[in-house]
Image (cartoon, rainbow, N blue to C red; front, side, top):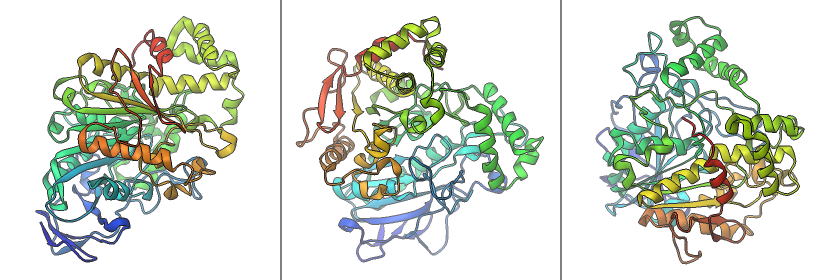
Length: 516
């Protein structure tokens, strides 16, 4: 437990060693940052599953974030988020951060946050993912984590080109190690290891679902929050993915795995740009790296893990934004000029010979839609909304709890071109819009005017984490998703539950083949 629970620098004694945190945040929240949860994956441990951390002597300072996982970085920020990871970067990145109202034995509920970023970007060390608001407003312990992403987390070449008896998903071994750390240590920070919720957005939501179905994670948490999971992505088998690893070797300018292992990590990140170029397909969400169905660490598509075995007893809250795809495509002039013929051809990738008919259905659902609008709706539905609805439907048919939402608050930036894009719900969920001042996506938003929506979402997430039910007094009654009413909470300027909100999408994609 703690050597000192008060003052500016509380010290916590763990089996790995002692940690000195920092108190004095908003509302008196205590933070412990940059805490190692696994051995540094460097040298001979590069492209190896996460290993236990050996611990440390003395008192380790935990007042500053650890380095983020190596990733591509744009000076001055990108035109949507303004950046989703910032220096310092280092392969020695397997650290986590803890926020708690007090270092005591109160056994508070615990939130574990897994960042997204298309499997190539992001960090638990970003201020936008600070757990301070949840710890303060929800009287809970919050944990965010860094894990391997990009080529260091989503490739697994091994020493001999990839052994079939080792997991292909190194990122998942990191997250499992972090969850075990939380189970074993969170009580020292005032948390309850029996009341853990894991939440993630985008790629982090895929991680969350994958963990729910992993045998080693059984019993480690009881609830999940899945924000904009791209469950519509097809995931390769190990053999299929080796083709992509071969392309990466070519992009890195090497001829063997042994040569690849000797490259410094900045060279690996440079090669990621080449893999982007070689794997991009028109009208498809770009994913140079993907989770792999290796039958060791990932046995089935994460979209189905919550429908099998012990995972069916996990409480689920799932949702999407109304205009997910605008995040990646709205500023691309090439897509703005898309023709009807091009979009029909793209639709045919999913619906076959019905491409023209499906285009017409999208046009009728959005009168006056341009071809690019149909394409954005298609990508949003195919990758996010339709598989999200399908999971809710299947859970409801099994009689297991699931709550569904849609975020539909349009961003005013860039004359509204983003609409309710991917990631836009994040500052509302965390109720920290001020921390997003650097992001072009949120420009023009009024923190005071949007306060009501932020409080509604933030309090709903807190209620779900604490009780398994997202309802609270300041919001209309949110019914569980059921096959009779299909209630979905619409988080818009007026927060309202709507029955069968995405009925047209549900019916349309009931005819489309499921992705693997």
